[in-house]
Image 1 (cartoon, rainbow, N blue to C red):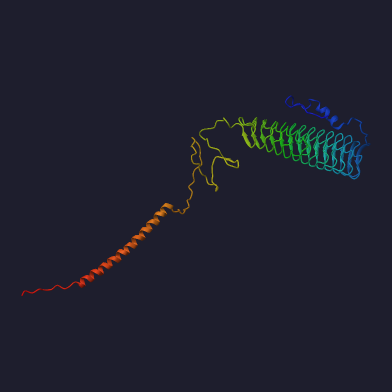
Image 2: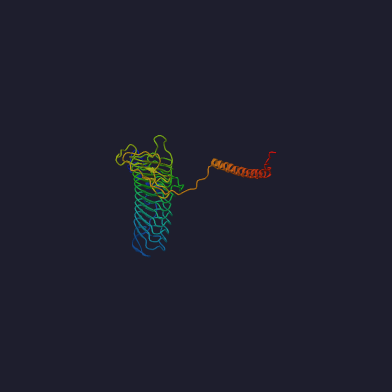
Length: 379
């Protein structure tokens, strides 16, 4: 027979459905007088132990500094040290576990070798056997837990957690179904608020703050919801952020998608035109109203429209470093042609000069060889 809780949609009264009545009988199957009881313990016991009640610390051998108060509290303890049990069969099965504190009926009932556990409330940490460093405050908090480093405060908080570690639940039914599969993967979850992350089974690294935050999430990981019923629409997807009361975490057009962020009271909200500004986001998800370069210098975005009253980032003059200008291929070709023509002209000029010099020599020779004029006399 399996104990079930009443539907939270029908009622949020934890007493409905016989939960309070069935738990001690169904889960432990222990009827009054079902076991033989030990002698009545009254006062100091060897080893600086102290007991008060029938069957308290009756099995102790070497354990020291233990205190048991209530019917069969610390009944099986032999070598455990510095345990405190207050309530019917609190720390009943503990043998050699130490530094545990159980306050309430059947608190830490099954603990045998776990250390540094603290349970306050009937049936809190009742099934813990060897888990260590757990803290449970509230009726049936961490009831099925056998793992380490979990903290639960509230009625049935982390109730079904079996082997997942390092979870924190604060509030009635917070993380109630966490790790109910026993797979141990539902670790590092934080739920603050009644019914927060109530349905989660195997999801990990989720954070829910607010009554009913991420209440329906079951299997997704790395989700964050802040606000009453924030992320109420998130079920199996991951890496979704929902901030604001009633912000569902689901896209109105695309539905539930991974890697999304939703913030309430922004869309449709009015702002003062006198101080309106642009908000930018970079690849790391950082938000801001001023854009800068890699050196932190303010820069403007070309083409960004100017809004009335907007205080846009101002352009800061940057020092321009001179750069060499590479030659244009066409210009270089023209330069080469000009140089070739200049060389051709120079050669032709030399040829002309040479011809001119030759002509001058020929002219001079002709002048020398010309016969002298003769005078003819009259007879």
